[in-house]
Image (cartoon, rainbow, N blue to C red):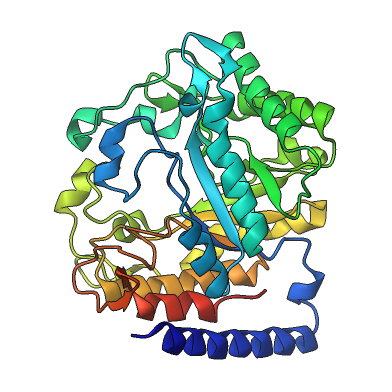
Length: 390
């Protein structure tokens, strides 16, 4: 497939999307133009994802922080405008002194922001691993077959971790002060949840709110206009009323139903290796529908209410593991993005290259086109382009 042919198809889809947007605007109440939510549509990029190298078996990245310029270029060329950088603070932080940051190790983030500016792509700076917390630390690492260096402190209870967390964001706020929030935003911590003895802490959300407020204050002390994002609680699932008054954006991650999105995803759900092959709509052994588009819409309905509080929203992650069959993934993705769009919200796939993305997903049964030596899932690309509301 030639680049010209692909871009011509993309241009046609963009024109169709523009027409769809105009028709919505003419319809009245639920118009995209009146939404307070940013029209961000894109992908997660993985180059600073984790200092634990075993993750490279699952996600195609080099673990060096060198974000690829072609990623930004192709994302722009295909009509998208957003990247989220889920990162591990340990790449640039002294493990023996969490208040000491290596300037040289932060330069790859600077470069990613410059690439975003060059190609008109918004860059969301995100701590996937923060001092004292990472959602991955609570899993069964032996069952996953992944060696993970877990945090020695607890973000929700240890003052030292909380101070280091606030300092990380104060540092970034100072470093990127003066760059418009139209170009750069801060995502405090990926999928916060306070676990005690393997169970969610009863007062975990209140603890997180205190931690988040301290980080928000630290950012605003350096740059009062920076756009800040919090994932929902727990695990980016539900809105956080305790942060409504801060006015920061709230983000949901949508992997529902888990039996479809995480099918044969051993590193997240060891038992998923024995789950039945998923369908969409998802059905149980008797043929009864247990999840469909209507159920997805009910699950996300609490997020519709945030506009009433003046709180913008975004869906920072969604997608399916590579073993979900292509036709099932396409059907689910089509419905899921319709549901998200019904909230006037933008979205980002996990990720761009590999697993859930359009490039090199290594999904059995997928028909690929050649894209500069990469395997392009063009059927998937057409679906996600058709959902753009930019």
